[in-house]
Every structure is written in structure tokens, then in C-alpha cells.
Length: 139
Image (cartoon, rainbow, N blue to C red; front, side, top):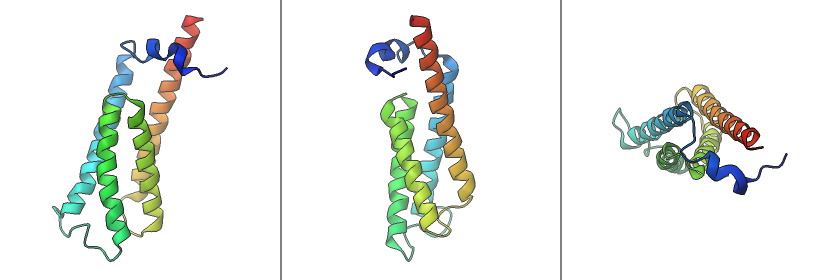
């Protein structure tokens, strides 16, 4: 079966979304907002030394990029837009690369990456399930 976004997408992604799906996306959005604010707290040095005062400038640059991109992704996921999920994926890829490249980049590194991966799987899986059910009902 070929996925044709031009046929059924307006009927599926309008006001017909299930309430639980909207709640799931909003919970993911709040988690993304907390992730972005976590990086800003580190950058500004609220809890100690500033995250910009590192020996490697690339690490500081990645912290600023992640602080901004997680907040942008949070807005997009809250609004249930496609670009929000794309920003989330790009942010997670960047964060995972930074965790692999720099030692002690973030506390609880494995937990952070695992929670992001599970959130993305849940959102994509439920989106596919909603699309498949709506496609079956229209046939």
C-alpha cells in the first residue's frame, strides 16, 4: 500500500484526531521544553559553572544549538505540525552525536537518549496507527 498524503491527510489530521493523541503530543512537547530549558540552565550557569566555559568550543556551540532546537521542536510538536517532529528528530540526532563525541556532555546520557527515542517511537507509531485506521474506514 502506498502512502498518499494528498488524499486522506486533510480528513485525518484536522479536528478528527483522537483526544489521547493530542495529549500524548503535548506531553512530548512539555518534555522537549524541559530539555531545552535544561540546556539553557547549563549555558547560563544557574546551578554552577556556565556550560560555555569549556575547553572545547564545539561542545559549547552544541549546547546552544540543542537549547534552541529543543524549544523550537517543542512548539512544533505542541501545534501538531510535521516540522516539529522533524526538529525533534534532528535535535535527538545532534544530541546523540554530542554525547558520543564529548565525554560528560550531559548527565544521565543513556536515559536522556532512551526517553527521546521512546517518545519518537510512540508518536510515529500512533500516527501510523491513526492513518491506517482512517484509511480503512474510507475504503
